[in-house]
Length: 149
Image 1: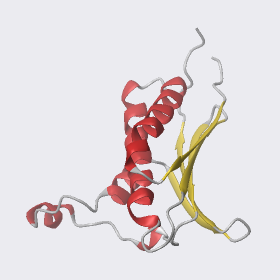
Image 2 (image 1 turned 135 degrees about the horizontal axis):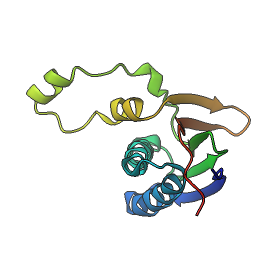
Image 3 (image 1 turned 180 degrees about the horizontal axis):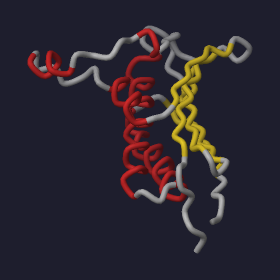
Image 4 (image 1 turned 90 degrees about the horizontal axis):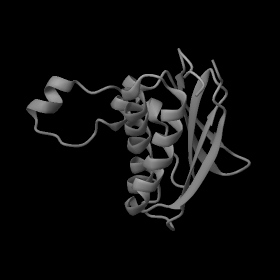
């Protein structure tokens, strides 16, 4: 087996028009790391939810900024870090919704953090004081490396 090492990043303005480029980068990297075809799509969905939340909420009431998405893999875990300099927001402060009630109330939004928690193995939020930015680090363990070609 060959270990797939990944170290990529993209910086984009906080505008949802840039989500497609971020999704493409993440999906390409995840496809190289996971033998299960659907896993790349799941990870891409989790990252899309996190980045969309930053783009839609992080800069409310302040000067719009950028979002940086970093993707790394050491062959045993696939890590995505989403960083921004917007308003502090710790996703661990949000409890999981009651899905049945959510559907009954006809809500269409508000499940992003729940989906991220369901897909990823680790989710860590930190505010990096020295850089004055938020970092959301999401990890998915690679249970089986892809075979070398």
